[in-house]
Image (tube, rainbow, N blue to C red; front, side):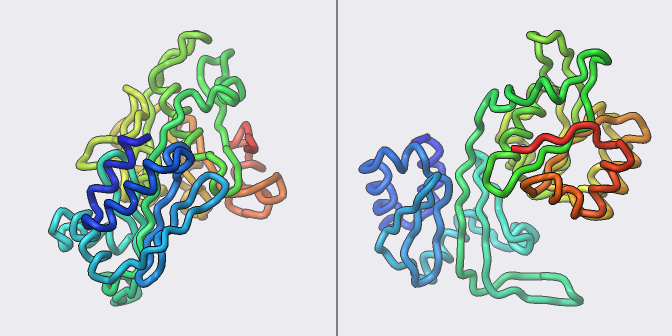
Length: 290
């Protein structure tokens, strides 16, 4: 964990880096449970832990935020303009930095960000084998394949972490149940599954997995099917009508899928008319609530 934190601290100005480093090494709970580092202009630094937070009484200046952003963009903010407009940057190690500020709008689209006011460093954390508890529900041992599966949970409860590990297992194969590895295609729209950095996945998603990121799920699914012939496709947080149409087309062509959505119960699933269409049409074969 300390190695991951050092990957982030290097982006901070020296004085802020020292303050954060001292806070981390003086508190084992931070080292074990740190999930986010929130930085807001003229506000204290907030370290978000698993079930609590620590406020570090140091007010961040606008110049310090600009220094951090320049380092995140490797001193070429223009080169990262598209990512900035999407509101996040993925850095080495798979960590994701959320960015907000004053947007510049043209023809209804965000074309730039100025006066950046907040940064949110989300600590990347793989939990290998965390999908063990659901793998028996996902794998169709009789047909040596998987059931089309929807994983449902509220935000922050680990559905993306479980999805990532599940993809890794399905891609590599599972010797314990004699499941041979499948060619997987991942549409990583927001970089939260594989966390690509310079074309290299920072998270382990398996040896037979192809990733397309920075594209909508509907377009990504179509590109993967057309170019990479996946046996399984995976997406995080489906829900739009365009997502469902692309998934339907993929399933008709014989591809299997694993997806996630925000929700707490079956009522939340049924409330989304697009996803309910997949359920009512028996395209989704298993729903797992976390």
